[in-house]
Image (cartoon, rainbow, N blue to C red; front, side, top):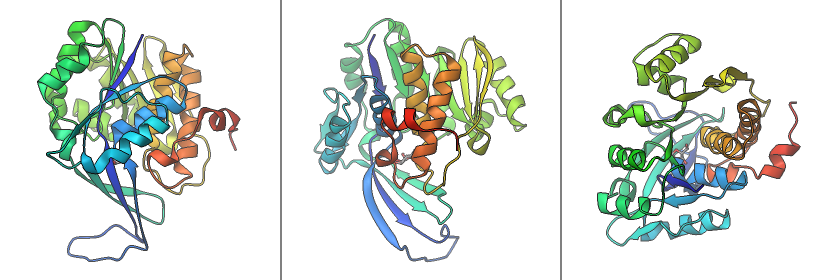
Length: 297
Ligand code: RIB
């Protein structure tokens, strides 16, 4: 069984600010950090740090070679990663405020230049019962999902950042959705309380497993194993960037290692609590030893 994450790689420009810039306002930033990110890259690093071998496919420009090196240092297999000399790497402008919250502007760059020819080449290396992890920061997702489905791969979708392009995908081919409250609401066009929305997602996609992350309120799983809740672990919040990616990578790693859903969610919640206590995206994702050492404070 092989695991492929077909996803984005970004250069993150993180500006520390008192508050997010408002309409017409110019604000100063007290610090600028340039580091590795992208929901795809972050989730591959989380999977690998959780001890699961993962191949990452995606495209970077020449300016993003350091992202490849960072993936490799984390133990991710990068043999399918493509480097373009025609276009710059995707990037994210991130404002990080004094409460640790963020708001993000994305520039897709190379992440939006995925071709069908490249997808076919990559997927030729995978077959029935292999796993595919996807987020919503690259183009050609409908084609990737269709092709992977034909091969009989298990498909996990984190529809983040959520936008209308998600509805171009045949969502009935998704085996597992990992998503937050807003993404779930938008997915089923239903603005209700969390449990009602979860029920609606399950009714809409009855064959899928759903993991709903709820920030302060933890997470809930709904699927073949019933309804299982997980509280969040206490943490001093410094920066929430990549907390969701950490949860996704760790949850999936738990399932792939044969943990039950409760154990997988518990490990994922612990890992996410560590990630929010540190600055940055990929750099904030813990190693498994740190996670297993963490108790509920
Ligand atoms: O989920 C966090 C990530 O979102 C950042 O690393 C940024 O690149 C954006 O993709």
